[in-house]
Image (tube, rainbow, N blue to C red):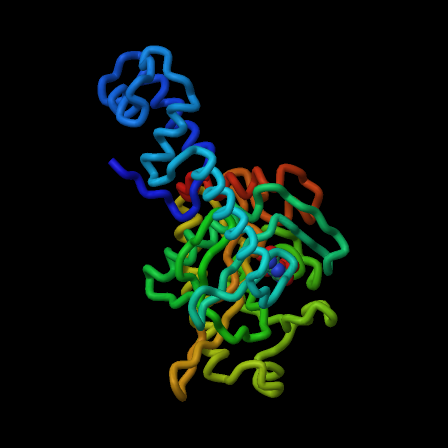
Length: 323
Ligand code: 5GP
């Protein structure tokens, strides 16, 4: 029977197939022996060499010999590496890269292992972080779409990348807080951990050079960063996302302390509306163990607490994401 070579074939898997064929043939399996004999009628099936099994696997995939199959696999791999290297980079941020997508109106979002804090004065590469954030963000975006929140997420493509809808990013960081922590605690001299009577939604201008200054709704409308209708929609969406995610994390023993969202505009003809963009992950949220208040988020990096990726993996694990 002819097998089809997958679009991204793996030589190791093909070699494993040949080894299994050799082993089964030597141990007397009639169908494996017949496959060998069909190509090498004079073969000693009890002692068949690996080179013969490799040749049979190659024939089974439509190639005259193992070296020809191997050359094809290597050519395809270098083509796909070349395509990866040549795809157009649209934007590179501190933790993510956006590439041109396969269809107009789509982009590929790549999650980097790089992490930065304090205006990028502190930097590190945390092996495995990108893969975990890709999975957690996928989980959260899917969850939000299931409750009717429109997001840019289309599908996860592989370990580190997801396909997203292209949006016109609104240059605001929208922070929602349930508990006093981080810059709120510093600004007003409040102890961390105090529960707020009502969640607070704040806006910051997304501008590294200006260190993301806090802005009021009046600034946003005055400088046309977003319309008043968009601001109202963003606040309503943020509160809805907060209500839902507090429940999602709470159910697995995690307190959602605060988080940052970004929104984008999508145009449909003359009209446009805002949808959720960027990511939701331990890079952009404060997540505390509900019992011990242990930090499971980027504060582990900011505050040199160690085991940063382990904290992120714990969040994934509790959400039921198998890494
Ligand atoms: P704070 O204002 O206390 O520093 O941050 C509030 C929340 O927003 C925290 O969960 C923090 O991780 C998130 N946040 C604030 N600024 C950024 C940012 O520039 N990038 C990311 N990924 N998260 C941010």
